[in-house]
Image (tube, rainbow, N blue to C red; front, top):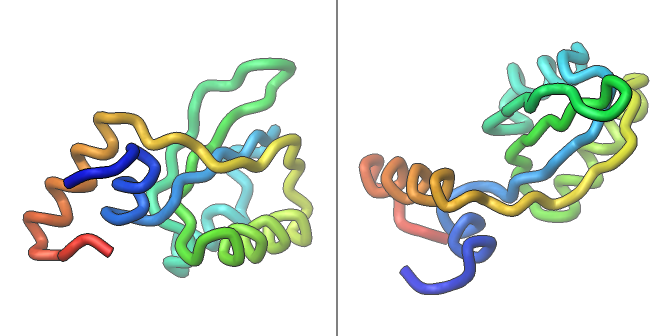
Length: 107
């Protein structure tokens, strides 16, 4: 497979976003995950003044990200930053192996 890690990450899974919040276990995130509206969810350890980074796979490109951000803000979640995250090489390899094992062709 050829391309940048971002391009390959998108072909083998949904775009990854970082959400900086003081509420990494907010019920709205759990609701989105339970309904399948968001994918892989990773909470990183808290850093500055209790802000944590939640990394989440969001389908639907920027339109999908906008809908998720709107939902989280309307649910009262404190968000300081919301941005596209870079897929790590380890995550990319895992995505490719998972897709190939499931017989899924890249997008």
